[in-house]
Image (cartoon, rainbow, N blue to C red; front, top):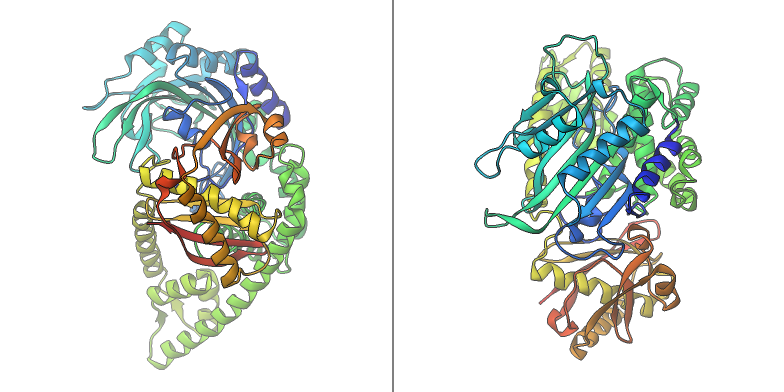
Amino acid sequence: MNANQLRTLFLNYFRTRDHAIIGSASLIPEGDPSVLFTTAGMHPLAPFLLGEPHPAGRRLASCQKCLRTNDILEVGDATHLTFFEMLGNWSLGDYWKQTSIRYSYDFLTNHLGLEADRLYVTCFEGDEIAPRDEEAAAIWRDIGIPEQRIFFLPKADNWWGPAGATGPCGPDTEIFYDTNPNGPSAETPATNGQRFVEVWNNVFMQYDQQANGHMGRLATRNVDTGLGLERTLAIVQGVTSPYETELFLPLVDAIQTLATTSDAFAVRVIADHARAATFVLGEGIQPGNVDQPYVARRLIRRAIRYGWTIGISAPFLAQLADVVIHMFADVYPELEAQGAQIAAALDEEESRFQRTLARGERATNTLLVDAQTAGQRALAGQEAFHLYETYGFPLELTQELAAQKGLTVDAEGFQQAFAAHQEASKQGAAERFRGGLVERRPETIRLHTATHLLHAALRQVLGTHVEQRGSNITPERLRFDFSHSAKLSDDELRQVQDLVNAQIALDTPVVWQEMSVDAAKAEGAIGLFEERYGDRVKVYTIDGFSKEICGGPHVTHTGELGHFRITKEQAVGAGVRRIRAVLA
């Protein structure tokens, strides 16, 4: 079975069980301040998990492209990935644990052909907030999983969410596949994560973590499941790593052709990061210094650094991006459409990084000369980390230059500085994304509606070539990225702002109607995100001004927005501009 067959088998399985198949949403979450990227299939569905009716119904399934960078330093081993595809099915207030668990077991055993006696499961052990999940365990026993292959684990292992400080959450039951059935009988999924590979996670969302600390109940009980395509494919094909499947082999072959030495870890880093960067750039993101652009830059530069370790010195990432695009063009046609822009961005970033490294080498030599003059035998770890943080200068290159001058580098001090930086970054990220998944505060709802007015105003002032390229909303402000090649003049910004405020002054009703995608387009609705909703979509209309496909929620009248003010306009990449604005 290949990857395309696995995707098709999964979606067809749920289609025949009355699930509407929805397309993959963008990697860039729309109006969600809690994450930089879509990290799970449920992110685009957050409004519906919180109670909004979904146009496609109460049973859904999809294959969602996702990106997670929390384990980026682990990438290079046989299992960790940044970009991946998540197969998932959802029940929005429809079926519950019994049906969900039986679907998963049936698909794995009767349709994928996995041996039932190699499946292990874990359930939530309970705490002061939620009880021990005996219901899920009883279902597993009834299916035929024996007691010795059912384990109860704490919240750290068997509870999902919320994604930030607030939002939907609940206990889960996870399904593991034993890759070494002849291994020690005392080992369990909790003690050996290499042997027992998690293949499916069934989350039973029934709680709502609120900002005041209270754990409330959701209006409806929802099921959210995720089956990782890459690791499942590896299991089905009988290989030990996703890197041994056709989802990576063409990339691995291309990298090895370019390399002059062999290093499996470096090849895997490059393959993963080239694949992930191609998908990020395919969303219209350009490498930069903050948020999604920074992640793109980090992926690209880490791939370049590991390229050096295996002898790749000339620019090579655009060549690898072509391989990625060819591999995925049928499934994600947006990659092919953005092919030229992806290649240009990679070439520019490789050139930029070479210039940065040249400056870093000069700075390194200065520090080394200063150390020699002071009679030191080693460069301090903090100084080596400063070179890494400022110039992306790898520790290995610093050590090499130091050795040429008869010096060493305090590698332990470097690692300590690096660990301190990571911890500070984690704390900063926790504060940056403290709002939780899709906050439904009045402030964020108002700003969400304001993005529709802003989008329409930009198209009136600049032209209909303007299309949304991403948005981010916090309770304090909105950020809106759009396609446009030139800096907006003061007069253009004033026109856009005045148009928005004029619509607010009219206090126009904001109404929505459910219809087919074709009907929405026939009515002139902007359909930037219609692929995530399936055949039926919600169209929000502000009469005479804006008509846009969107999941909501929105205010009922534009007059609720107050006064709209643009605070900043800037470039964020080739052909992409960004506006920040507030409501008062």
